[in-house]
Length: 372
Image 1 (cartoon, one colour):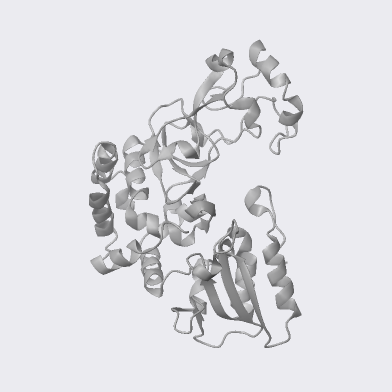
Image 2 (cartoon, rainbow, N blue to C red):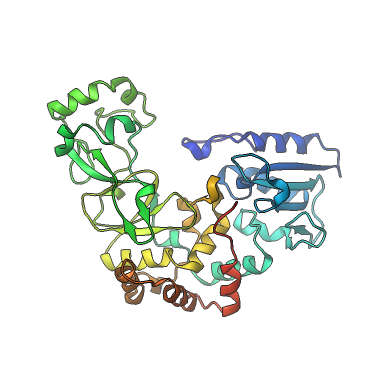
């Protein structure tokens, strides 16, 4: 019941570590204790939500220790380890969970995790800051809707086709092409569609001949239920006039404005369509600021190579005061970022808008943006 995925897409695929935790918990005698070494992403990943909720309500959790920086956990693995120790009995009132393996490790009230759903393992001081900001300001996803970029379902057919087909291509932006404040397309995308991304009724003869070699692959695409074989998916936000994009997988949150109308962000990016250039520029600066990067990292799923996944859910949870959207000062940072070092001034501006004290900024600054 905790393990089974639902819906479609990679983030709904079941993680076998959840199955082991569920089975282990059910085998415990009342009061019995289990201990597991798990992928650290189960503390924040959406697919592990049922397991976290059940354990919060039905077990006394003793330890949730992120071992990503622990030298004792330096074995060869592509996932970062998390230690979980829990007993099969309901938590007593006021019970606190240790966030490390040492006896004097920081502790977090188990009940405090119910509100967010995620098991944040940052210091209690950082968690208090995040909780205060969540209470005082609206979330980004209450004002801005984000989605993954365009999906081809068959990159070999659509990306960087023969040069003779470039007349029917658009510049394509991948996650690897993004840096803070800078989006430089690095590929060409076969685009047999109108300005809104609606596929044309007929493909040019040269394009049809090229795609014929991929006919079986195109028809087997998960999203290919009907429509022509040359159609692309999730094109609506990707063709909007004013767009902000950020990398799905990155060492820290990295956002940019797409200024060229014909550029198409692919599904290694997230894209938010907004109503004006001023809103796009101010939102880009907001997402590239140090305090917001730290807050996003708290709930981001850890990934290999010191990176994290900054999905729509994670970025949607960061605070966004209404006054920030379209703010002229924030927009000015985006205008000048490629020619000047604006990071310190931007961080100070965002800290002031969020009412962060110097001590709180220092605590957020300590949130690791990279792992070993």
